Image 1 (cartoon, rainbow, N blue to C red):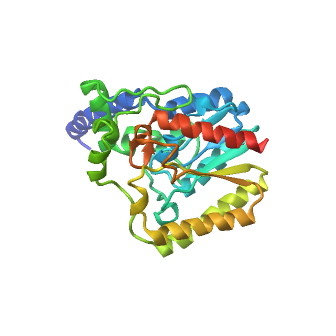
Image 2 (image 1 turned 30 degrees about the vertical axis):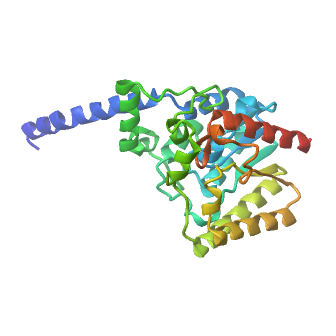
Image 3 (image 1 turned 120 degrees about the horizontal axis):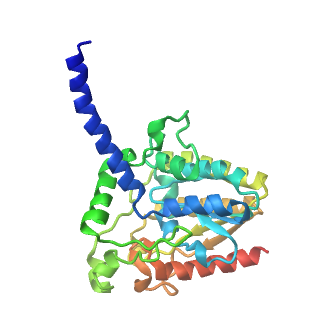
Length: 311
């Protein structure tokens, strides 16, 4: 191969590699609940008694710093039961004192597709929690966070380093204590204006997906029972305009599974606050389906009472 050609290749690839290296460095230095959780696992894994799993609704609903029991919240956006299961299996050997696992079953949890084998957060779990969710052997590239979803992290990098907006206030338990600046705050908690806004909600019944998801869910619960772990199944509060939009068919199927679970498992308790419009007010919400830190304080207190009742 001519030396000139090799030189041209190097001149092309070296700047590309350096560019990606810079983006990876910037990504790793973004404020992140994952980093806080990683540090918590390394420092206090042997003391943790409560593990919270679920999607962004649970991530925003439980501030583990407010719990009396040593706890960690590994819930995150778009995280489904199959990923929860993998995370539990991956971190369980590190948590010898684990007693209780908190799970989420939202309105349409059973009728949304599970995370795929190529779910973009797999590198995050590998990098920060040491858990392989790829269902294959991993490679060097699998630990590169920026490359897991460049458009997402490019926007985060721009907002943090250039615009310097949307400040994060992650505590040592990975909870963002400054996470107020969402739709409701932007509308100044005006309920008339909020009522006009459309929001994301699953309106399409998926019986086939339901069958697949519930099968895995029962495998998950069996796994927990076999290991003598207590389980709290939660439904996080939804804002009042969310509730009447739910599809009755989807809701009925979800509730039927909760009833089956109640009948079958003696190690499971429930914390069902999806329809609580009295305890949770407009200023407790980030948007129609997520709490802000004030709402999280209320929900975490309810979780604490449930945990106390298990003793």
